[in-house]
Image 1 (cartoon, rainbow, N blue to C red):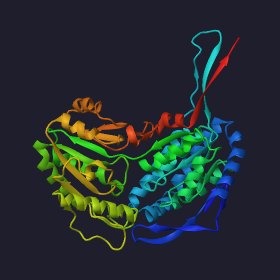
Image 2 (image 1 turned 90 degrees about the vertical axis):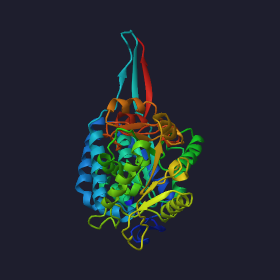
Image 3 (image 1 turned 180 degrees about the vertical axis):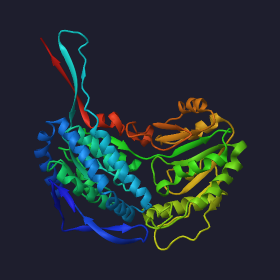
Image 4 (image 1 turned 180 degrees about the horizontal axis):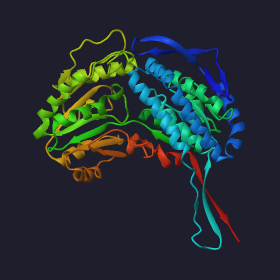
Length: 463
């Protein structure tokens, strides 16, 4: 059920939630609309002024939320696996990360600064909440992404209206029910619904801040709608992350790390490695090493012991990825796939290493969002950098070399928000996360994520 004004609430109309491991509905969720949104806004307006009064109390509430999430880890993880498909171990890790994010923000303070500089009149820089914040979250990390947005919004003193993806709404709805008794009524509202609910949140004049994770077209549409009310918008819109392997790499040593960075959550990670550029001198050795490691990634239901790659979350994802791989094969690319039979039914997809593919093929330049990894040879580092930057994406990248200082120098030439040297995964919750170009606007996590949830206010005190 939805959570509105501190109470659980159902709706007459509901929609089906699909288990991607079977391709069949296993539950329904409330189809919230204008009446539920209006109620959530009303309760938020009523509760938010009091919520702003004590930052200490807000930090204490966030810590209590962290502990509650940790206690409910197994219940949340099982629901994530059912509706999203990822292996249960990854789902547990996602819930643990959500608890970590809440704990991290419980230790932060909303910053203020004295800009007086010894003058007689004082100038203070303060950070004020927006009031009501609308959060729209995706299906690939339904709890982790929600936590990254909810925690700083609450610490800043805002009330929150969360709309999860209709593909995976149940675990965020459960999160709302878990946290409702730890927060004042109306401070955290969770509403499930379809695209129209997202549009209503985007247009609502009393929701002054939006934070959205989704596709580039989704972000563009939301930005256009938000412009009518001149809302502040934070967008995280995906990536097509390159990994550049320098000729001094040992393919056998790094193949495991490359695939772990590429195929977590069946490759359905915005900041996963999605294309690999390898110096031609080690190209064949790298392809061979990656293909040998494919045996480490058995495909199966997320609840199946030993499964490393679950189903793709949606049927559309499977169909799109199938078409991209078929097209690459038709054009002469070499496809090396797992030989193990795929489970049936469900949206399962055999992981694949794609070699001998042209660098401008859509499988390379688009965000394929699945367990497929194109590997492209390059002649010199300038060519690798040029190809890495030749997309509208700019979320993350990585450089692999035995000389970290060389990797650091290359990092400065890559057009993206985060670069790893000999690693690709997201850093600590204290580091900002976000992208260049079409990968988004603004930053999440750390003090930067908190700043996104605040309006700056200057107070001049004249004597």
